[in-house]
Image 1 (cartoon, rainbow, N blue to C red):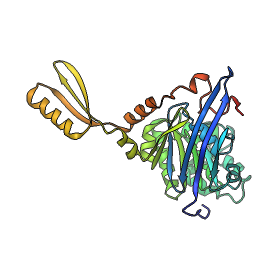
Image 2: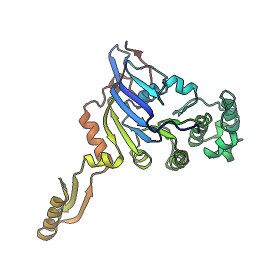
Image 3: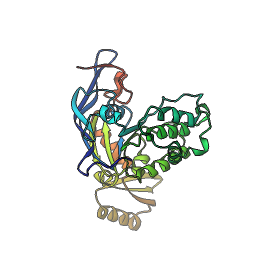
Image 4: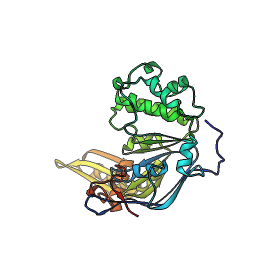
Length: 312
């Protein structure tokens, strides 16, 4: 990795980002709505949200693949295009970009030949856990192996920032586990990692910070623990008179009193106490935002790329 930027440098600085398209029926599609996000160097950040939340559109703007309708975005203090051209940012996209009849090693060598001072091929293969697959044709690689190959290609330029767009979509549980093990090794080197996902477990287990999007807007931003604490209710479940009951309380004192009453004055069975999870918070916040389905109903969601006509 190149010399680290100063501690005050933002890896990503997005201010007031808006992105609109015209849908197939001429109706405007608001893929992003006034998004302001700053991501520091060395952070591991998940862009979490349902399909159509605007995750991929935000990534496209950071990568310079499209321009905002309004607002600004900078990458390491420069424009997205300059950051790409100087090899300071690498991307792992969902699909595409691989030739099926070329070997894993051949693919890496081909891309390396287009870069200035790429990392050694053997080092990239090792980091991506592809050494044993170097001679295998891409067409014979599994979905998870192909994603690791895309990861290897993103590493070639020795970037300061890695952008991952839904990197484990279509992988089984084992392949997802192996992919994130590989990514943890990269994170330990101090790389800034920003990944879009709709898997809560991935965001909770790997990210230091979660930016929750819905309907093209940021509706929450914090550590997994901070987001879970937004919904601090405690759930008490029990069976009584052949029926299952669920009661939500606001604090532990109330739940303790309820459980004590159930156990001492009723015939309640299977009494269970549980705190609300990050999934509960996710569901409540996305329902509360009021934007769900805004983009998706037009046929051009914020996570499908620039398929419509850009609004001026």
